[in-house]
Length: 135
Image (cartoon, rainbow, N blue to C red; front, side):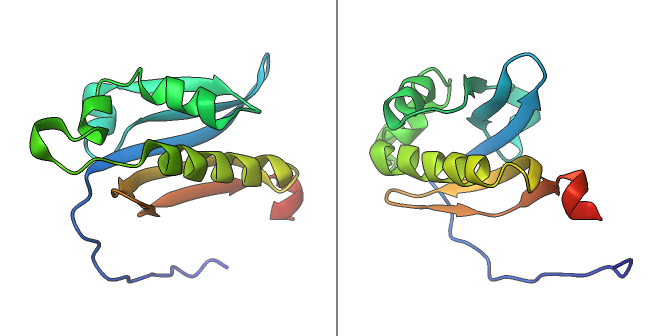
């Protein structure tokens, strides 16, 4: 519809870290997953890594370690530690969902994702449907 809509949700508690997550098609390589520092740090730090899909938990873990903000996930200066395996599984679950529904979605951008010690919360998302879905 052409009518604007609003979604009002309760405030989330302060996260250990904020991540961004995106999947875009690349004409040469297929689907590319990008993970990086999210929220207000996304543009300032330009701290991202890219992974070609399909991927695995171990590959996601390896790429997370390449981020400058990785120490923040590991309890930097007394902050809470994030369960990296659960975080990687959450990222993989979203990537797998996107791949299974590839005919429905063109791209996805989640920013920020609030990362907590044992779970994540997607705070904002842009999901672009394919042209088939727009009709």
